[in-house]
Length: 303
Image (cartoon, rainbow, N blue to C red; front, side, top):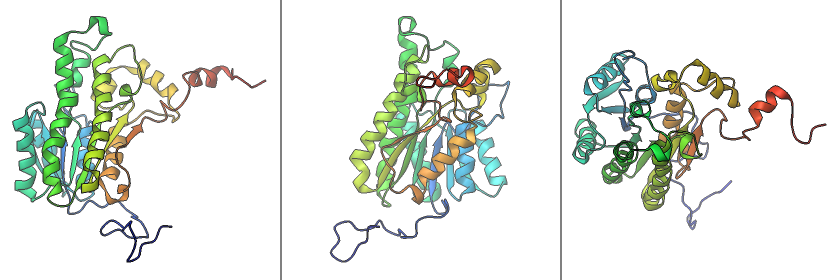
């Protein structure tokens, strides 16, 4: 165990206990979650997605939360649900592609709660994966390329740009961006989505390197299949296929991502920054042959 004394060049972080952090406690912290409404159409308006689940989890752990979403009405419904359960939350209609909206989002946190400690850059327009689609590169349109990059990648950049100066005023903060395992591998579709998510992975490394010494930690979560509305939309056959390729006997729920974001936002993660943390049930950790080998028993090197 490292120890520090009067002449140490490596002092402990403020308020750090050598016994460690036993629980995730976010009391006194202020958070913004983008894409917090998790609304995906009139056919399923109340299905909780990753943004809504993260907002509820952060509030349950004590944070005051600003729920920002392009759908302000549903964001307000989510915020009211948090308040009904005893949490502290306000809603804001904001388009993360518009810099003035992002600035207003940060201002809302400060005006209502006096500070900003946590930012979860989560917003994405997942409806574009079906309409107009996200096909192979030879079928890609320039309009769809720009539209996806603006929401998935420009939004988090603007969030970081405007949140960091406010966080620095109170000694730092934690930023977590929602990436995807699609940003770490080639796929038969999800071309621009994967490119944008790969950009997020580099964004968090850049922010960590540039502002880590000033108390800003920046990480990404890279979910696999999560059974929010877009995940359910792929159908039972594909869900079963994803499940076969996971090491876990199930695919993810929105709360699985939310719990990791909450951990990264807490002091328990004080030594984690610049990382892309996969939340995918082991989907990406093994050879593509594993799922077949589990069924066939054919494994190289086994007689």
